[in-house]
Image 1 (spheres, helix red, strand yellow):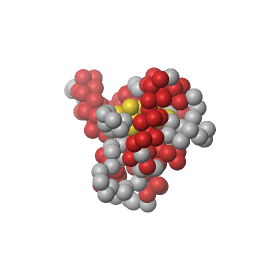
Image 2 (cartoon, helix red, strand yellow):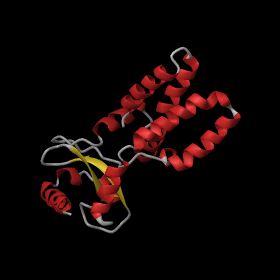
Image 3 (spheres, one colour):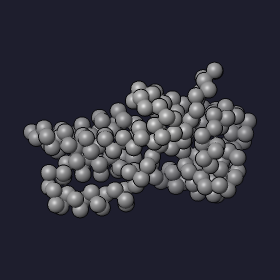
Length: 188
């Protein structure tokens, strides 16, 4: 999910749960949105660019097809350990037991992670389909599943790639090998 979607859904949940409690609603929205600051931190680490506008522009184009003359790099996944529910949620909810005012914030973080992990069955299916290999180059390096556009119809789908292929622009424009890979994956 992108920042705007998290903001919209968190706001709707906050309005439903805390209609007459603006501070609690603001905490829920903050928890539902601000956890994505890890994306900004990873963007800064990988690019050296400290501008928020640069990060927002990168977020808009990173999964789209490059247009003619577009040679901007793609940096792969920008998720840190903050997006691992089993790492984040237990200590957060233990903290809530001590500081009850953090309850709406914890709801927001939990809701954010729930929304981010809804496509897990699709991710697992792509990982199993790949057989532990990169769908683009076939290497057995560590793979991760990415949401990327499919060449023929330009619709988004989940695909397992090694880090080198995920970061490479060639993956987006190498039509022949990608078409063969996606058709081979569809046959499994």
